[in-house]
Length: 264
Length: 278
Image (cartoon, rainbow over all chains, first blue to last red):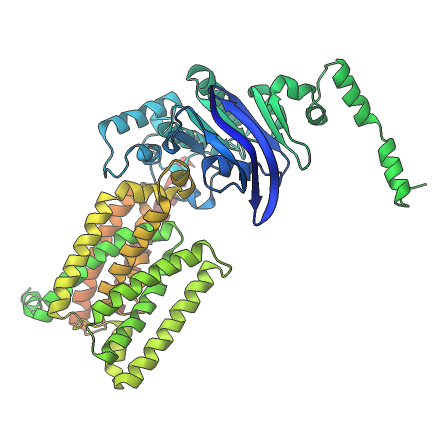
């Protein structure tokens, strides 16, 4: 069952088009990784999905009765937050705000949900600690717990392991996979770590300036775009052909010749 | 003791305290959000706009607060818009607007009535500034600011901590930013007469910064800055009465001393922590 369907969407950043005619579908329970080089429009696309930026063409359809207040979001941290005086509990609880409407105070159920999500991510003992004094990995878990307070359906994660050490980032990937498999939460993650993306996600959307890829991870590893970034031991006809193409440097020589360059 | 009772028997002192304490409280509550959102200078800009409005009002013989409240509220919306999306960066926009408003105010005040003492009391505040009708209006406005702040406490926290998250999960963060700006505008207009145009923004910035030296959670920062602000205000106004110093400036100096004390304690605590660990 599709949860988000993007039909021929185009978006721009500061008036410059970053991608156009992009179509893909996210089904309930999927784990989609959006990868691509800097400037390929990953973050812009994510802001579009979150409704923070308008699309300039096409449409994004939220099906399955997905309301705006049922999306959980893990943003990249800003500098201001790093020295913000707030306890872990205060931060996690603020994720329940979108369930409150105009009601002024948090209910017992909100507090229980916040505590439950902290326990789920193993940060219950940090409850009264100051957010800014935590390590990077702990801070990400706090923000993930907050995102879980906002949703039980869809999590959108923006570069969740940036700045984490290898141990903390593999732990973060493990937590996200567990949420996807055990709690059937749909995951959309923006990342530039293609290798980790292929390891964990079941669908890949690769944004590249002139050729985009959308499909399952399996198809991606055999695609030409995927094979540029992944080392693997597959010897199927397709992969062999891609490898031969990548090793063939004749187009470079002909380019250099036609431009009068080269070292001859 | 007798001196304090004598001091409190003056009606101008009673009015100054009745107007000032709620203002100090409101300013401290809003100040935490403004400082954390990097909007601290908006308070400064608004007070200068308020000065311009007061000067125009008194030149034409209008009731000062009736003119200043709408003008400053409109200016607050404009400043917020400017700092969010414009070619001119927020800090320069605030500098332009505040100095322009100050200049207009000074020219109008001198041309209008040529009374320099009046101008002086606008710029640096006066303990005598609160008139009986100001007291009623100030109390009403402060009550509104306090009530709205308490009712929207959790929203203000969310929008201050992470606007992007709030927006993405369906909270109308733009509206809450406007709310914060509106409450700030009201607080500044009420407090301006006692504290003075040039010094009112310290009432917003100092208590928040002071309590952030020591407090680690949002709630404790809010409560601590409210207490610090009210205490500094009372101590400052008593000191200014006994030493016959300008009210606004004295309150700022008391705030500065409180800030330095808190910073020192925080340093000592940090030193002891590292020392214990070896």
